[in-house]
Length: 239
Ligand SMILES: [Ca+2]
Ligand SMILES: [Ca+2]
Image 1 (tube, protein in one colour):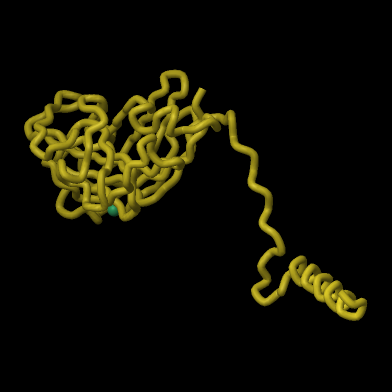
Image 2 (tube, protein in one colour):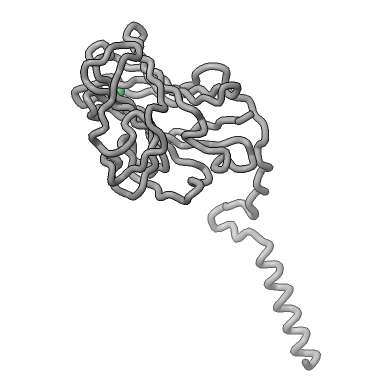
């Protein structure tokens, strides 16, 4: 390479280097993205219930009306709980329904598809479907008839992108594995489930914590009537 060509070439490289390190300032974007934070290994779970969001009162479609949705993770028992507060539970205490729909941070162990949940608008990996038969009594005397082809009082995988309301859309992970406590006086329905049914140790990954997105709703007589959350997030820290 002749000297004059070499100088020109080196100048071009230097110019490129300067350009690549500068911020063009056209959109005031930061020059460089911050480094990713270290994975969280240990954290503290709130001791009691923590609200995931309130919902308007009076917006139910002629049925059970949710006004608050809370979660609680008991790390000593490894149990995940959800408490929904309604404003009209007495009218539907014989056949209440709740559903919770989850997006796992790392997906599922088998790379199962995201599907459209029963309540909410975000695509989800797993669902709790708790649809009681008619004629039950509080706090926990309820039965379930599986006519839909999936675990109606259990946890299901969403299999495809269809609305998750029938057996062709869902695969049961477990049946009779979700507990319900209906408290008419306090207008609340509490559900509890083994955390591993929602997110397995393998699905949590090595960080021992998981940020889970959720949508949820309530209903009665095996029909939904009100969406309570849609894409809220909470983090659990596993011991
Ligand atoms: Ca409502
Ligand atoms: Ca609503």
